[in-house]
Image 1 (cartoon, rainbow, N blue to C red):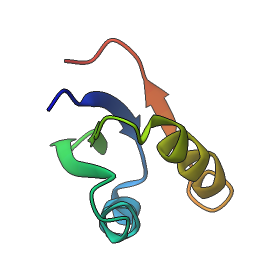
Image 2 (cartoon, rainbow, N blue to C red):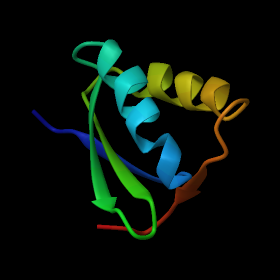
Image 3 (cartoon, one colour):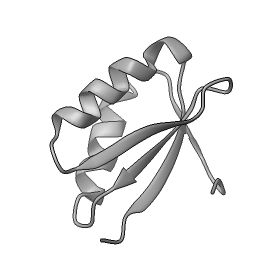
Image 4 (cartoon, one colour):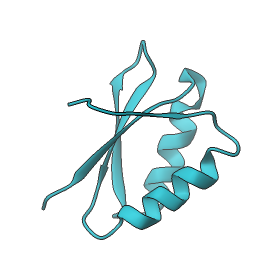
Length: 73
Protein backbone atom coordinates (compact mmCIF):
# COMPACT_ATOMS: atom_id res chain seq x y z
CA UNK A 1 0.00 0.00 0.00
CA UNK A 2 1.46 3.35 -1.07
CA UNK A 3 0.71 6.05 1.44
CA UNK A 4 1.22 9.77 1.09
CA UNK A 5 2.82 11.62 3.98
CA UNK A 6 1.60 14.98 5.20
CA UNK A 7 3.61 16.81 7.86
CA UNK A 8 1.95 19.28 10.19
CA UNK A 9 3.17 21.47 13.02
CA UNK A 10 0.53 21.80 15.72
CA UNK A 11 0.52 23.04 19.31
CA UNK A 12 1.93 20.27 21.53
CA UNK A 13 -1.17 20.24 23.71
CA UNK A 14 -3.31 19.47 20.62
CA UNK A 15 -1.39 16.42 19.36
CA UNK A 16 -3.48 13.89 21.31
CA UNK A 17 -6.74 15.53 20.21
CA UNK A 18 -5.63 15.54 16.56
CA UNK A 19 -4.61 11.87 16.85
CA UNK A 20 -8.03 11.00 18.30
CA UNK A 21 -9.87 12.78 15.47
CA UNK A 22 -7.74 11.29 12.68
CA UNK A 23 -7.96 7.76 14.05
CA UNK A 24 -11.74 8.02 14.43
CA UNK A 25 -11.88 7.87 10.62
CA UNK A 26 -10.85 4.22 10.48
CA UNK A 27 -8.60 3.37 7.55
CA UNK A 28 -8.13 6.98 6.43
CA UNK A 29 -4.71 7.73 7.88
CA UNK A 30 -2.24 6.83 10.58
CA UNK A 31 -0.71 9.62 12.59
CA UNK A 32 2.58 9.64 14.44
CA UNK A 33 4.57 12.26 16.25
CA UNK A 34 7.63 12.96 14.11
CA UNK A 35 9.23 15.43 16.53
CA UNK A 36 7.60 16.01 19.93
CA UNK A 37 9.80 19.02 20.71
CA UNK A 38 8.81 20.88 17.56
CA UNK A 39 5.27 19.45 17.78
CA UNK A 40 5.49 17.99 14.30
CA UNK A 41 3.25 15.11 13.29
CA UNK A 42 3.16 12.93 10.20
CA UNK A 43 -0.08 11.75 8.67
CA UNK A 44 0.37 8.65 6.52
CA UNK A 45 -2.66 8.87 4.26
CA UNK A 46 -4.15 5.75 2.71
CA UNK A 47 -4.67 5.77 -1.06
CA UNK A 48 -7.99 7.29 -2.09
CA UNK A 49 -8.40 9.34 1.11
CA UNK A 50 -6.40 12.41 0.07
CA UNK A 51 -9.40 14.70 -0.59
CA UNK A 52 -11.09 13.69 2.66
CA UNK A 53 -7.92 14.36 4.65
CA UNK A 54 -7.46 17.76 3.01
CA UNK A 55 -11.09 18.68 3.81
CA UNK A 56 -10.75 17.46 7.40
CA UNK A 57 -7.51 19.40 7.96
CA UNK A 58 -9.14 22.52 6.51
CA UNK A 59 -12.05 22.16 8.95
CA UNK A 60 -9.79 21.39 11.92
CA UNK A 61 -7.74 24.52 11.22
CA UNK A 62 -10.76 26.51 12.42
CA UNK A 63 -10.18 25.19 15.94
CA UNK A 64 -6.54 24.04 16.00
CA UNK A 65 -3.74 26.23 14.69
CA UNK A 66 -1.65 24.07 12.38
CA UNK A 67 0.89 24.59 9.67
CA UNK A 68 1.77 22.28 6.80
CA UNK A 69 5.48 21.57 6.68
CA UNK A 70 6.89 20.91 3.22
CA UNK A 71 9.96 18.90 2.39
CA UNK A 72 10.08 16.69 5.48
CA UNK A 73 11.06 13.04 5.17
